[in-house]
Length: 312
Image 1: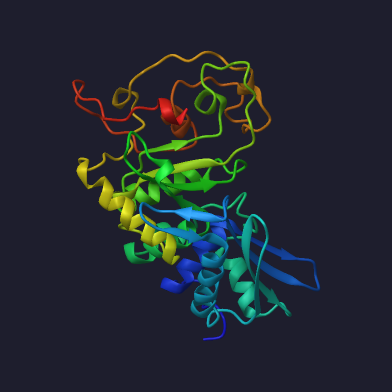
Image 2: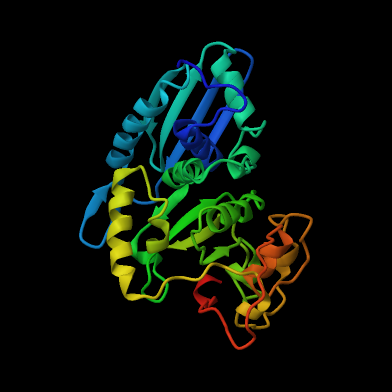
């Protein structure tokens, strides 16, 4: 199979490629050259588990080599990869407007940049094993795990979404919780009421949104990138001392209510117009405004064990 299949075809490899594109992919067409670039970003040369340290650029280069063998049967393109100081890039170059390129445009539903991508409708309608491959593709390119991401000693995976994309975090949360049964701890929005709460003099910086999942819950999805999977397994084992995590619930009664000070950054141009100027006391209120429909009634005497202050 030298080209992506037709409109209604979605297998594990196609779902995985689609997840990478939604997570960190950019498609460009200037008329004479067509390229798909997938970034594998990293912040440090070394990645640390509990008892191992990994050379991230080398490990990501190895991962790209393995991923190439997985996707090269799907597309008719020239493949290359190279490292920068912040990312390993996987590049597919299409010499013609061939069926591979046209089908890529079809399955991405016309979204050519991860900064504006959404979870395609066909993923929500797909079987769970296909959905899992899609999320794994996203996690391999924009999922991060390290001991420093712990919350009161409980290790977490962060899936980072570009600050421009306010729709994808809620869609990914829905895919994880509703479709795959993977509890999400919270979404850290790049909003002053959650990034710099009660610090009205501190400016809102341009940072990614973060979908946060406890390591043991994310084992149900996992990583295809070897070193990330090894760290995940170590940290999930360390989390075994904790009770099973609760799914996130935007119902305010499920959270400790704390009033926050107004912040001038609530009117920042980094915030979409639909919520610009609005004040929020918790991330879950932003989730509701961004389209979350996972509101669940709870026993008034119960509060989910979700503290927010280290995420705000």
